[in-house]
Amino acid sequence: MYKLKIISSTVRPGRKGPLVAEWIAGLAKETGDFDVEVLDLGEINLPLMNERMHPMLRKYEHEHTKKWSALIEEADAFVFVTAEYDHGYPSPLRNAIEYLVHEWAYKAAGIVSYAGISAGTRASNDLKRDLATMKMVPLTEQVNIPTFTHFINDQNEFVPNEMSVKAGQNMLKSIVRWTKGLKLIKEDQ
Ligand SMILES: Cc1cc2nc3c(=O)[nH]c(=O)nc-3n(C[C@H](O)[C@H](O)[C@H](O)COP(=O)(O)O)c2cc1C
Image 1 (cartoon, rainbow, N blue to C red):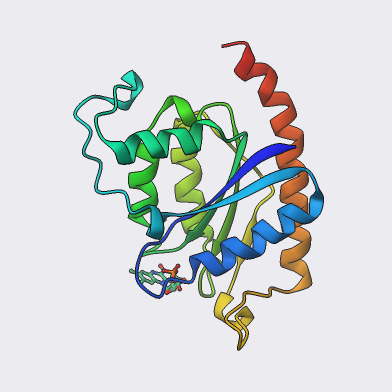
Image 2 (cartoon, protein in one colour):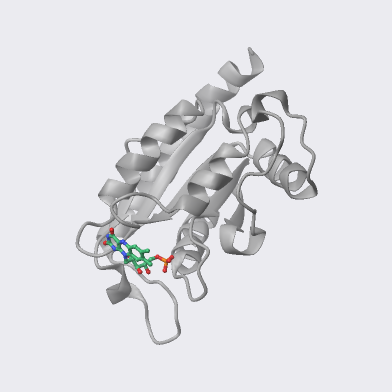
């Protein structure tokens, strides 16, 4: 079993990100390949990056950073669930990424984007660049959901169509494959 952390990118009250995150978490659990945890940045509530030292040094002063570092360090792989804000990915996610360096490295990163007609593809492309900078491997297989509010039912659950489910399953398969390989690279550091 691999430890998969699903990171939900938005923090505003009433955010929809956690609904999408719960959906992909459920799909991941169904595979039997992962021990799954959802990390909702709205709950984790990191302040704007306020560490004195460069994160390369891992000399964290603040309790919130130590906790965030431990959560990310123990992960084998990630799924980033990202909204599209102004044609990019939301700034709370950028902030959460820049708190750390080593903890992210040599881990596979799936992306689930949700938005209006754009399906969040601009946010996803924007995010991939920053994930690669942190030595994560952003996967080709991803899920981009257009007009995502059409898939939120009266019980406030996100229930996407078959196409998104297939895309999610493909992405999760790819995460397993890459995580096997990347473990070798990580051990060789
Ligand atoms: C600040 C802001 C910027 C947005 N920019 C975009 C955008 O560029 N493209 C888009 O399709 N939707 C955009 N939207 C609409 C979001 O897709 C929609 O509000 C979604 O629910 C945001 O995710 P959240 O609920 O998790 O915050 C924007 C929403 C907000 C609040």
